[in-house]
Length: 271
Image (cartoon, rainbow, N blue to C red):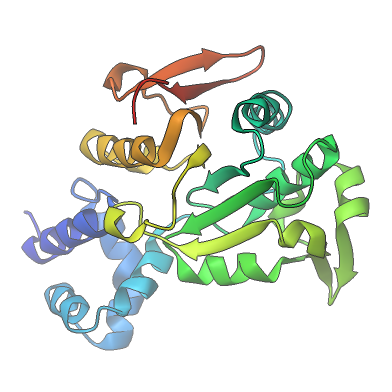
């Protein structure tokens, strides 16, 4: 029997952030049981509660989103970006700063890794590359902005020793990222489905949106990719997770195959 209250709640979540629980209502029920119990509400009442108190969406997003990430994740893509794509863009853009958007950045490991790798190339003076990192989850953004990670954190599982010694200082039973790296990244709150709130993203040259589409159905995937396409400058580059493909969607990107990875490039004749 279909639980109509859960179905209604599932549809609200889908329209808000694209997460599709329509076929996983029991999973949704389990994830929200504690919060609904704290409020003393039924699942039907919780839908009304979200409408009455919009700030509750922030907590709901924290409950539902998965924020597993780490430094130097899928390093072949990172190296391809910093050693192949960025030098190419530097020749194309001249004196204009190259702008990188790290979408769904979670606690900041991806944009900070990019910043470290960019510094390591010694080809990009301070200010010549701007990194904008966004996420729908305000709590993880607050953590990312501190630049501090606990010693036992999963975040350090793949980071090279060189980076740990050069770009982190031990602090309060953890490690704080170097100020020079922290200054390269600007964090902003953004729901990828609320395109009207992304006006601060313009003239983007590279987008990283990795391991996000796997949580969306095809309709939401098309909406998100179309949004990324609009934000990218002609000839801009898009990096997705290794398990994600948009080749068959016909959304204005051409696949680029390199030796150890692949990514996408926006058609140069489209805006």
